[in-house]
Amino acid sequence: MSQLQTPNMPPMQDIVDDLADSRMILSVAVAGGGASGVTDLLSYSGCSKFLFDFQVPYGKGAFDSIAGHLMDLDYKYVTQAAADRLARGMLAQQLQKGPTFDGKIRVGVGVTSKLTTRDGEREGRENIVYFSAVLRDVDSTDVTTGIEYRPVALTRFDQESEVAGALLAFLLGVAHQARLMSIENELQHFHPSA
View 1 (cartoon, rainbow, N blue to C red):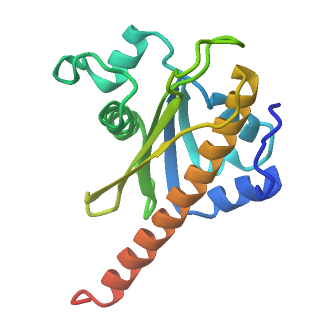
View 2: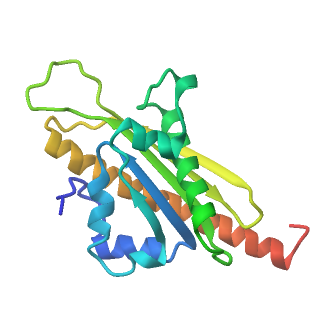
């Protein structure tokens, strides 16, 4: 397991419980750093309540099989647009493969990153991570959210740990958004004019 460098991060079982209570079904693709955040989750009980699929499309062919070819993005795999495509691709795969989850918000998450490849790497290399989530409610309305994150750790190992923590924090934010969407759907069910 990775050691998360986020001192304010709640215990892992609390994160799993929060995600499980979020009213979402989650499909995640992590291309690059941060995948250990999801693999850490799998060590705790309750993941089957919210995690539908987890993929690590490390090669370009694997990435393209989820996100489609990025010709219109000049084949740039570490951009917010590429992370958005990855998230949409994961949502599409979930909708195609998965059964109906009554009242659950369907979510695709995509993460792309460029991290340090070795200690002592040339100064000035930009290390960056893009997170994206597409949430679909029961009425097939999509909400997309994304953030850009710049790791501060210097070594690849420490960056992986830092990005894993950032991914978990992002997933908690997505879970909060899913809860709000679910509550809004329930209110509309009881009060159609709301």
